[in-house]
Amino acid sequence: MPIDPTLPYDDDNIFAKILRDEIPSKRVYEDQWAIAFHDINPQAKLHILVIPRGKYVSWDDFAAKAPAEEIAGFIRAVGNVAREHGLVGPGYRLLANVGYHGGQEVPHLHVHLFGGQPLGRMIA
Ligand code: 5GP
Image 1: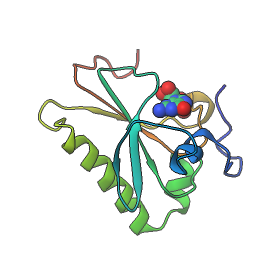
Image 2: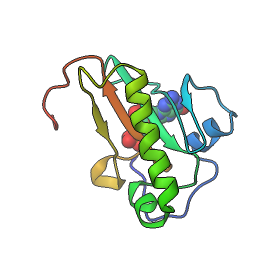
Image 3: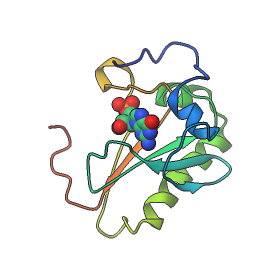
Image 4: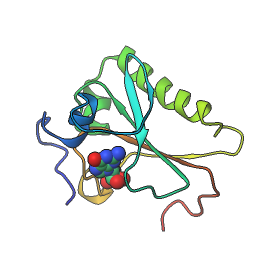
């Protein structure tokens, strides 16, 4: 079920638990600002989720409230993950779902990083 991105942050959401290492994930990257791990249900040959360490429900929440340094750190982390996976040459796609129309299911900001194959049309 899509979440309501206007609700307060829920410390018990699944990505908060992954951040705290309370449930396992295939982590591929971490720095001061972000971690990245493989999506449990990949939609492309490579499907990685990049999430900020900070507590933000959605892209909207992050864009509105995060300090500039944290925004820069997170955006750089997304770039680092793509670069480290050799995706810059062949190309890749980023996606952040927000709320009901976006189909967001986990109430902690995450950017989907898809790659490893031609990705087709932007919206099916
Ligand atoms: P959303 O629809 O919120 O943009 O995307 C949520 C994503 O999180 C989905 O692609 C889903 O497969 C992934 N996901 C949900 N639960 C888990 C989990 O426990 N571990 C991992 N690695 N991914 C998850």
